[in-house]
Structure formats: C-alpha cells, structure tokens
Image (tube, rainbow, N blue to C red; front, side, top):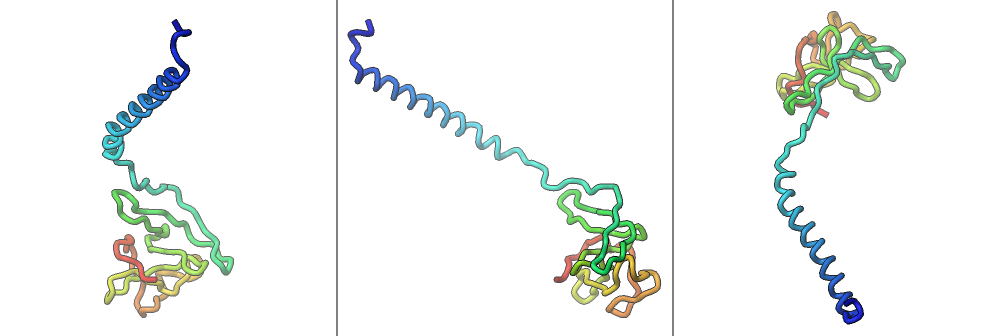
Length: 140
C-alpha cells in the first residue's frame, strides 16, 4: 500500500500533522492562559520574628532590631527592642523621628547602639517617640 503513495503526499501529511499539533497547543494555551492570570500570587511575606543586630559604619553594634509590618501590602519597617523605629542611612542604623509638618519619618541624627534614645533629642529638638510603626512615608 505504501508503494503507491508519493513522497510529496507523505511530506504534506507530516506537515499537516505538525500544524495540527501546533493548533492544539495554541488552543490549550488560549483556554488556560486567562485562568493562569486570574490566580493571584502572594506579593509579600510575613516578617521574621527573630531579632538581629547590625554593625554600624563606625563599628558600634546596634541594639536588637526586629522587622515589623509587611503584611497585607503594608511596608516593612525596623524597630529596636525598645520600640524605636530605625533605618540604615549612610552605613549607620539611625533612629527616625516624625517630621510633623511633612508627616514623614526623617533621620533624627541619633545612631542606634551609640546614642541613648531615651535621653538624647533628635534634630527636631524633641525627644524621640516610640511606636511610629513606619506608617508615614520616609523622606530621602
């Protein structure tokens, strides 16, 4: 039976089979792609409950730092074990204070592990507040 079939006919059949495979693949992708896009992947992960210390540029070691926030799309922020918000600025972990006029957290000028946030005052001339929770935007 195969002797009567021309080679050009066999080539067209093989080509048609390739086209059919590609058509099936395209149909499967066209059907599945909208469902794959509808699945929402988590955008954040929960903060680690484990505290850590860091070494500042001047060699001082910070007090214990915890990462807080980061759930449900909220920004993560770092706080000391005493509850003061800190951020790494120019190689040093510095305490942040609220700039009341701009409603943002700003560098207080006080270095974590070197200055005592309970006694020292920040650049604003005020004592630092605990529990700022990173809720406001940060200035640069």
